[in-house]
Image (cartoon, rainbow, N blue to C red; front, side, top):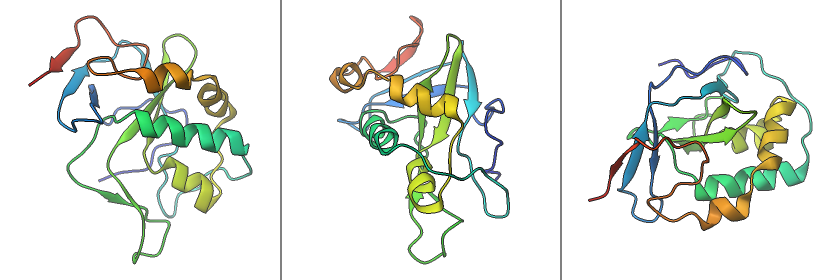
Length: 160
Protein backbone atom coordinates (compact mmCIF):
# COMPACT_ATOMS: atom_id res chain seq x y z
CA UNK A 1 0.00 0.00 0.00
CA UNK A 2 1.38 3.39 -0.97
CA UNK A 3 1.50 5.91 1.84
CA UNK A 4 3.67 8.56 0.19
CA UNK A 5 2.11 11.45 -1.68
CA UNK A 6 3.87 14.67 -2.61
CA UNK A 7 2.77 17.72 -0.67
CA UNK A 8 0.06 19.71 -2.46
CA UNK A 9 -0.66 16.88 -4.94
CA UNK A 10 -4.33 16.01 -5.36
CA UNK A 11 -5.66 13.52 -2.80
CA UNK A 12 -7.13 10.38 -4.34
CA UNK A 13 -6.80 7.76 -1.61
CA UNK A 14 -10.56 7.62 -0.91
CA UNK A 15 -13.43 8.95 -3.01
CA UNK A 16 -15.50 9.98 0.00
CA UNK A 17 -14.70 11.79 3.22
CA UNK A 18 -16.10 10.29 6.41
CA UNK A 19 -16.27 11.79 9.88
CA UNK A 20 -16.78 9.61 12.93
CA UNK A 21 -18.27 10.94 16.13
CA UNK A 22 -15.42 10.89 18.66
CA UNK A 23 -17.71 10.47 21.66
CA UNK A 24 -19.54 7.39 20.42
CA UNK A 25 -16.85 6.03 18.10
CA UNK A 26 -19.71 4.70 16.02
CA UNK A 27 -21.94 7.34 14.47
CA UNK A 28 -20.67 8.45 11.08
CA UNK A 29 -21.24 11.01 8.39
CA UNK A 30 -19.92 10.50 4.87
CA UNK A 31 -20.12 12.30 1.54
CA UNK A 32 -18.36 12.84 -1.77
CA UNK A 33 -16.48 16.14 -1.33
CA UNK A 34 -17.28 19.08 -3.56
CA UNK A 35 -13.91 20.60 -2.64
CA UNK A 36 -10.46 19.66 -3.94
CA UNK A 37 -8.34 17.82 -1.38
CA UNK A 38 -4.58 18.39 -1.41
CA UNK A 39 -2.13 16.01 0.28
CA UNK A 40 0.02 17.20 3.16
CA UNK A 41 2.45 15.10 5.20
CA UNK A 42 2.09 11.67 3.61
CA UNK A 43 5.70 10.61 4.31
CA UNK A 44 7.46 7.33 3.60
CA UNK A 45 10.96 6.08 4.33
CA UNK A 46 13.29 6.63 1.40
CA UNK A 47 11.24 9.50 -0.05
CA UNK A 48 12.43 13.10 0.38
CA UNK A 49 10.41 15.59 2.41
CA UNK A 50 10.90 19.19 3.48
CA UNK A 51 12.37 19.85 6.90
CA UNK A 52 12.70 22.89 9.10
CA UNK A 53 11.29 24.55 12.15
CA UNK A 54 7.64 25.40 12.59
CA UNK A 55 6.03 27.71 15.14
CA UNK A 56 5.20 25.97 18.42
CA UNK A 57 1.72 27.55 18.33
CA UNK A 58 1.09 25.77 15.01
CA UNK A 59 2.00 22.35 16.47
CA UNK A 60 -0.21 22.91 19.51
CA UNK A 61 -3.13 24.03 17.36
CA UNK A 62 -2.75 21.05 15.01
CA UNK A 63 -2.76 18.70 18.00
CA UNK A 64 -5.90 20.42 19.32
CA UNK A 65 -7.61 20.03 15.93
CA UNK A 66 -6.81 16.33 16.01
CA UNK A 67 -8.48 16.09 19.42
CA UNK A 68 -11.82 17.22 17.96
CA UNK A 69 -11.78 15.83 14.41
CA UNK A 70 -11.81 12.07 13.65
CA UNK A 71 -11.88 11.45 9.90
CA UNK A 72 -11.50 8.52 7.50
CA UNK A 73 -10.69 6.15 10.34
CA UNK A 74 -9.45 2.79 9.02
CA UNK A 75 -9.63 -0.58 10.73
CA UNK A 76 -5.92 -1.22 10.25
CA UNK A 77 -3.07 0.83 11.72
CA UNK A 78 -0.19 2.42 9.85
CA UNK A 79 3.17 2.47 11.64
CA UNK A 80 5.63 5.29 11.09
CA UNK A 81 8.22 3.68 8.84
CA UNK A 82 10.66 6.54 9.50
CA UNK A 83 11.10 5.20 13.05
CA UNK A 84 12.77 1.96 14.09
CA UNK A 85 10.15 -0.79 13.88
CA UNK A 86 10.07 -1.45 17.61
CA UNK A 87 8.04 1.26 19.29
CA UNK A 88 7.05 3.11 16.11
CA UNK A 89 3.87 5.14 16.65
CA UNK A 90 0.73 4.18 14.76
CA UNK A 91 -2.10 6.10 13.18
CA UNK A 92 -5.35 5.10 11.51
CA UNK A 93 -7.07 8.27 10.41
CA UNK A 94 -6.79 11.61 8.74
CA UNK A 95 -7.41 15.28 9.36
CA UNK A 96 -9.01 17.90 7.08
CA UNK A 97 -8.06 21.56 7.25
CA UNK A 98 -9.98 24.09 5.14
CA UNK A 99 -7.80 26.30 2.94
CA UNK A 100 -8.92 28.92 0.45
CA UNK A 101 -12.49 28.39 -0.82
CA UNK A 102 -12.72 25.04 -2.62
CA UNK A 103 -9.47 23.61 -1.18
CA UNK A 104 -9.06 21.36 1.86
CA UNK A 105 -5.78 19.89 3.04
CA UNK A 106 -5.74 16.13 3.70
CA UNK A 107 -3.15 14.91 6.19
CA UNK A 108 -2.56 11.61 7.98
CA UNK A 109 -3.05 11.54 11.74
CA UNK A 110 0.68 10.87 12.14
CA UNK A 111 1.48 14.37 10.82
CA UNK A 112 2.17 15.80 14.28
CA UNK A 113 4.60 12.94 14.92
CA UNK A 114 6.35 13.62 11.61
CA UNK A 115 6.70 17.30 12.54
CA UNK A 116 7.86 16.86 16.13
CA UNK A 117 10.03 13.76 15.74
CA UNK A 118 11.29 13.81 12.15
CA UNK A 119 11.55 17.57 11.56
CA UNK A 120 8.99 17.61 8.75
CA UNK A 121 7.96 21.12 7.72
CA UNK A 122 4.60 21.30 5.93
CA UNK A 123 4.05 23.95 3.25
CA UNK A 124 3.38 27.43 4.62
CA UNK A 125 -0.17 27.44 3.19
CA UNK A 126 -0.99 24.48 5.45
CA UNK A 127 0.59 26.11 8.49
CA UNK A 128 -1.43 29.27 7.81
CA UNK A 129 -4.63 27.25 7.31
CA UNK A 130 -4.20 25.43 10.63
CA UNK A 131 -3.57 28.70 12.42
CA UNK A 132 -6.78 30.12 10.89
CA UNK A 133 -9.02 27.31 12.23
CA UNK A 134 -11.64 28.57 14.71
CA UNK A 135 -10.82 25.96 17.31
CA UNK A 136 -13.50 27.13 19.74
CA UNK A 137 -16.22 26.56 17.14
CA UNK A 138 -14.76 23.20 16.14
CA UNK A 139 -14.45 22.01 19.74
CA UNK A 140 -18.05 23.10 20.43
CA UNK A 141 -19.44 21.02 17.53
CA UNK A 142 -21.61 18.16 18.80
CA UNK A 143 -22.92 15.26 16.78
CA UNK A 144 -24.52 15.32 14.24
CA UNK A 145 -22.52 18.48 13.50
CA UNK A 146 -18.86 17.83 12.76
CA UNK A 147 -15.77 20.03 13.11
CA UNK A 148 -15.34 20.98 9.45
CA UNK A 149 -17.18 23.78 7.64
CA UNK A 150 -17.91 22.31 4.19
CA UNK A 151 -20.34 19.48 4.83
CA UNK A 152 -22.93 19.24 2.03
CA UNK A 153 -26.62 19.20 2.94
CA UNK A 154 -27.03 15.75 1.37
CA UNK A 155 -24.30 14.08 3.46
CA UNK A 156 -25.36 10.65 4.68
CA UNK A 157 -25.50 10.23 8.43
CA UNK A 158 -25.46 6.94 10.32
CA UNK A 159 -27.33 7.85 13.48
CA UNK A 160 -28.02 4.46 15.04
